[in-house]
Amino acid sequence: MSKTSTLSLTEGPNATRVVGFGSAQGNRVVTNDDLARIVDTNDEWIQQRVGIVSRRLGEDDQTVVSMAVEAGSKALADAGLSPAEVDQVIIATCTMPGPIPNAAAQVADRIGIKASGAFDLNAACAGFCYALNTASDFIRAGSARNVLVIGAERFQEWLDWQDRANCIIFADGAGAAVVSPAEQPSIGPATLGSAGDMVDTIYLRENRYIYQEGQTVFRWATSEVAPVATRAVERAGLRLSDVDVLVAHQANLRIVEAIARKLQNQGARDDLVVARDIVHSGNTSAASIPLAIDHMRSAGEVNSGDVLLLVGFGAGLSYAGQVIICP
Image (cartoon, rainbow, N blue to C red; front, side, top):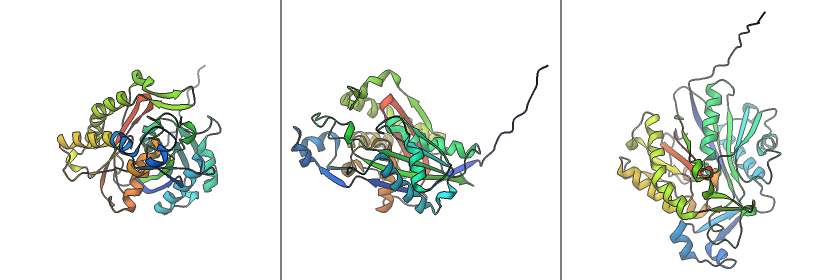
């Protein structure tokens, strides 16, 4: 005789919001002139191709975990929450030294978040958007109440410092956000996707050095990312003219500005604020979007209530777009 059992499901709030941001960076400022001393390059060449003037690298004790702890602690303080009020930690990263142990459990413990759910997520440079969407869905499903989301990367050990095309781009840092329930939606539906047929355009050469086919990735990003951003705006029930700030993954300043121009040609405002954090932070992969937002908030370039359009893209190729309201 078969047995039929009925399971109970949790239910959460209909809406979520970001309630705090925080960030951390490597302590060492590395200029283009510094790089020119170790590889065949120069300041003009770097600025023309990727728009970077300087980047930040971590000291020996500034690991993926330690930078994530610093950024996460700042985000909790910004949100006005204690570690005891957080029950889920998600770390977006692709640069941990090894696949285990994960970063999230270590970060949670060091911050003082005990017995929380904790896991790492790897969608490379789109990782923060994937993690933010996951956190929002956890809360809406009733599986968590407050979730700490962190993008954290330490690239310097994954770079061939004689590879002039790639060693000039990447940097170390972390950016964090706290996601909580809301009465009105402040995190829109995510537009997620992938182009797995282009997986060989960004990969680990010799299984140890990050490598990308720069021109191929540039052409793909400048043609395919703007439509992803537009769909995210439409899914949020908004128009491009409603967007105050574009925060694209800080891959390359030329890519960021090309995406902005396309969106403006399609209806985004002329006064659209565009994140250009890459100029002095470099490409920090999963950390770049929250890092840029935190810097822009501190500089007064982004204000509470602003409509932010986030769009991440990177290895995989994985991509994601989402609209949020700035806390």
